[in-house]
Amino acid sequence: MGAGGYGRADPATIKRTLGGDTNWIIELVQVKAQDMEDAITAAERETLGRDLRATGKVRVTASDDIAAHVIGPSLGQFRRLYPGILLEIVARMDVVSLSRREADIALRGVRPTTGDVVVRPAGVWPYGLYASRDYCEAHGLRSGSFDLSRLSIITWTEPYAHLRGGPWFAKHARGAAIALRSDSARVHFAACKAGAGVAILPSRVAECDPDLVCLLQSEQVVSLELLLVVHRDLLRTARIRAVMEFLADLSPKRS
Image (tube, rainbow, N blue to C red; front, side):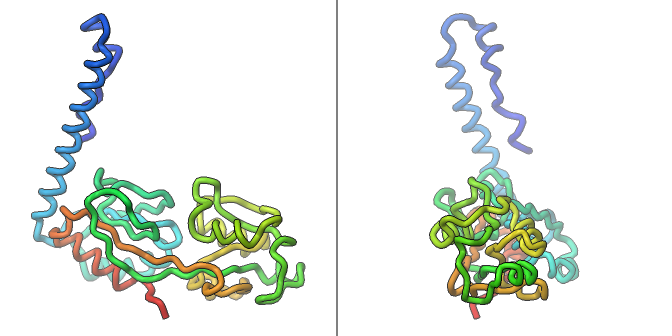
């Protein structure tokens, strides 16, 4: 049973029905409704936690670059190993709620601060500073020899400026023109390859592209520690354990 249909009290209806000062009633109903929704969600998690079969749906969330380049290439192998598990991959930058079952497992670089979750280290995702060959030629750039303040940068939109290479740019690229802001690492990659400016990109992806030049290695920029996060109630579920073990094996380790 899903929780979405419970507890949506309509204040206007309550006021029409009871008249007078009903704000306290409305607040009480909403609190009780939230309690009911939390209880139903907890019951769903407990039920799932007793499922010992490696079958059913598992929802995984990760950023778009990690979903595409860490998980994506091995989905055929996963399907052969676990034909009874249906994976749903939600590629997004913002952190979803595991307690609300917006996802079952998260593969991300941000450590959760709330919720009854289990966190396991899953590897590292390094980022370097890159530009296209054409951009390097046009601006006389060489690896390790350039003035960022004279270049154009490709960076994150404001809500995500504190993630990935955002803080590094804020510290080292003061005065640089901003060529593009985007909330997608894959858009950063495409814009950089097109010669729009310099960008902080996943090293393991950018190094495979002959049109890109590494200006600074990840040791000088940033490496993201990957974490596998799951709600504690789901750890006993066979399909959850199977997906977590698979993702842990996929995640690139520090060399």
